[in-house]
Length: 87
Image (cartoon, rainbow, N blue to C red; front, side, top):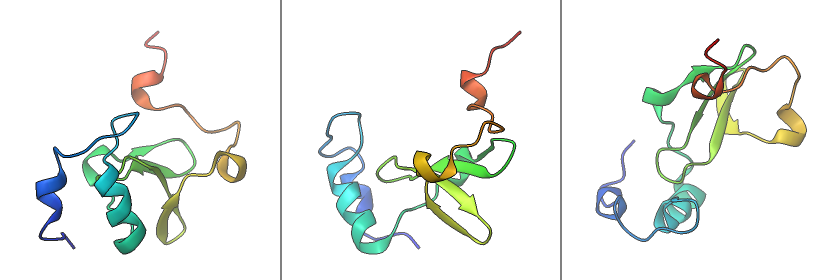
């Protein structure tokens, strides 16, 4: 569900890495917003990033969660399609 005032922060204050500072606060309050246009399959699960703050997300069973490398790393996971070797 879009938040009425979130659009005015889209080009707003940015911190290191290009993530929105305001977006991070909105995500802590309302939860992450899945970027459905950027979903990709890593060979095990579906992954994407938050539309507001850029946090990596992973689809676990029935919901989207933050991607935790310590918990979710697996040698069978493929890298993002843009990072794969073209040959």
